[in-house]
Amino acid sequence: MFNGKLIAISEYIQIDETDQIATKTVRYRTVGDMTCTAAIESDATTIDEIITEITQTTLSERGQTRIDDQFSDAAMEDRKTKGYF
Image 1 (tube, rainbow, N blue to C red):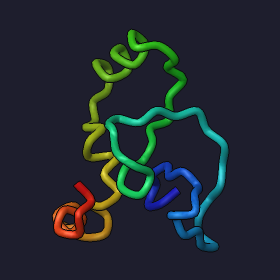
Image 2 (cartoon, one colour):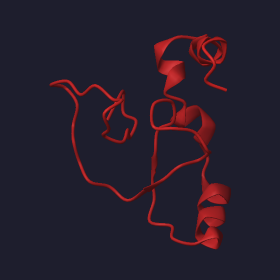
Image 3 (cartoon, rainbow, N blue to C red):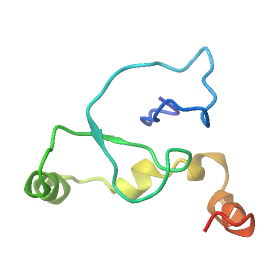
């Protein structure tokens, strides 16, 4: 977890002593990669179940999952200038 967000463990993510490691069933809100998009804990296994979850949520999933927003207001724009998109 990073600031309460579920982040996949990979060679691209630096883990420190305050991180909590756990196995969860998750889904991702959008196409992205694990360095800029956090997962959402979910047991949904079909499109209909995902749609039901999305229509019942009261929080913005986009706001919950943008990891870059935790680093700086311009983090995504910085990625663009470096050729990420």
